[in-house]
Length: 509
Image (cartoon, rainbow, N blue to C red; front, side, top):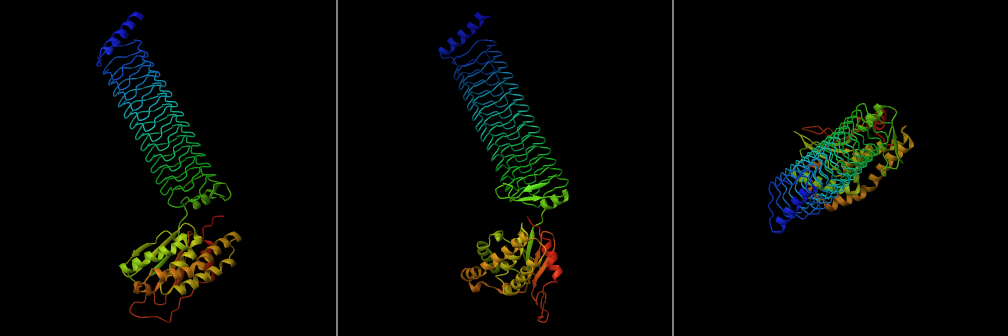
């Protein structure tokens, strides 16, 4: 047998030395070709079953549709080699170099690729079922549509690799470096992703049902429409992620860092959220039925300096389904282009002095009236915003007097010292900015730009997150068509109405 192997080696070396590079269909089964140089050779449909090619140089070789099952290719140089459609099942490629190689549609079932160099390699549509890819380098590799079910990728480095629509069901990616990868619409059901680095990755539409992502880093990842049903995300870093319309049904988010995450439209039915860090997380537009949550961390640094406790699931659900507070100014006139430009300039400048108004108002133009609606995630901004939003209008003074009157009643409410300070401080800040705002508007808005729109009667309504409304001003001529009604002067609602309004605020202790 040894003599036959030597003969095979001698013959192919002789042909290669003489300049022959085309070995299409050659049978080299069980031959010993270790450390051989066949660079740039054509080995299409060659049979290399159980062949020893370890340490060989096959760079730039064409091995399309070759049979390399159970072959030994450890430390082999296959950089830029073409192995499209090749069969490498149970082959040993430990520490092999396949940089920029092509393995489109290749079969590598249970193949050993430990510590391989696979950067920029094309595995699209390849079958790597149960392959051993521990500590491989897959930087910018293409694995789109590949089958990696049950594969072992522990400690792999795959920065900016493409796994779009790949099958990674049950794969082990523990501690892998996958920052910036494309896993959109990939199947990661029951995958092990503990302590994996997926920062900045695209997992939109991916299926991670029952996956283990405990301690994973997903900072800045795109998780739109991602399925996390039953997944373990305890202790994971989901800061700055986009979880819009994601499914987190029965997911474990214990002590997960969600600071500045956006999950509007997400389904958290039955999820566990105790200890989650939730500073700057939208608290509306999500499904939070039957959640398990004793407390959340709402401190800016996530250091538990500000804790929100819940005594029941209903309290937690209400907190997570916070309804934004609204300031609504109804103008008894239709908005024209000139007035629209003036409003944009005015509110842009006001936002410079009061940052909470940086979000422009929603403008609805009806048959007779124009409605400006400002939305706020925190009720503490309702009074200050009403105080400043009315500034461009002629009847601003009356509205501001009533807002101040409501503000003065805050100190007499049974709201708790911290809540009273919170509300009073916000209103005082707006009042302190009034002089600067007026001066600024006088210099930035030409008096000629003030159309009849700003002289029209207005009505100012505040709506708290608890859905309690309070009309703080309604001009005596508001709604009076064809004549003036100077005898009817607006007065604030009774004290109990004001008390109920302030008590409905959603406070964050």
